[in-house]
Amino acid sequence: MKLRVYSDGASRGNPGVSSVAFMVLNEDDEILERRSYFIGERTNNQAEYEALISSLKSASDFTNDEVECYLDSELVVKQLNGEYKVKNSDLKILWLKVQGIKQRFRKISFIHVPRTNPQIQEVDQLANQTLDKIRKKI
Image 1: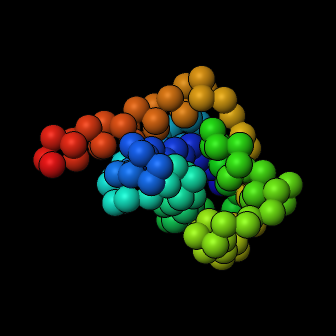
Image 2 (image 1 turned 45 degrees about the vertical axis):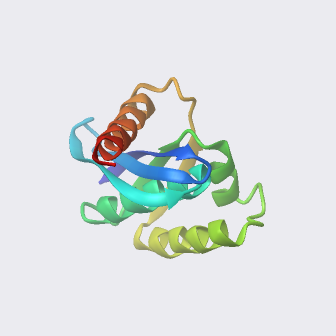
């Protein structure tokens, strides 16, 4: 079974209050899981990594075969594809988590898509709705 995951992290401030959101879709474009939650204070790049980690953990509940990961963070995609080195120690920890989780799958790919991608817009909206709810509680 081949899955597609779309993930996004949101941060209000850098660092600031942050959330993650993701969707896991099967080959028929059916949503298997859609989720968003608050993660505390993070940088935007940390939130992007944590959103991806959450999406991969979810995807591993459905398959160990193939997963295509779509992100709007060019930095994260290029780091995961080996085009950029990970110099920041906090991001290196998250990068290593992804390296461990990706072993659960036969094949995995990381693909940069623009913010205008409809699924990325949806997960971005979910992440921002979560932050809006948190702001109301503060």
